[in-house]
Length: 158
Image (cartoon, rainbow, N blue to C red):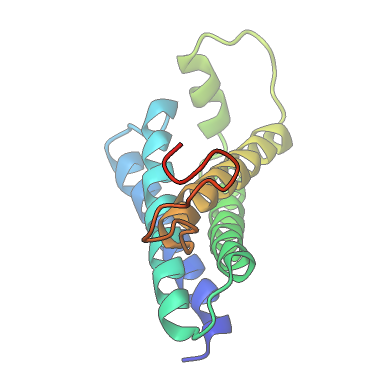
């Protein structure tokens, strides 16, 4: 497999997992509890981790920038897929979903569907960026040397 297809593959898997997670919780009526969306960060982080790991295995000369972009692409694809599904779900499949969601948190203002969809996309983008930064710390090359540096200015063992 080409290394350029790795982010797309994991991004699609991420999108499907996020949709399945949402639908499973909707079966039990728990999809209006926003706190369960924190687990989305775990799924996103796992997808970015596996993307970076596979990407590094396919590249002989692994560069931080390339791995970072692979992680961002994975999160972007997953976020776009889930946000598109969320928009369809909230507008066509369950049009009362936004009202139920906001009523649970005692919000007394009308919220547009577009604003909630924008919020879902923004949360996915921020989660992707942070998860990519964290995962890349695991895969970047270390600058530490095996032999401690000698300080020339102050002598050998300053």
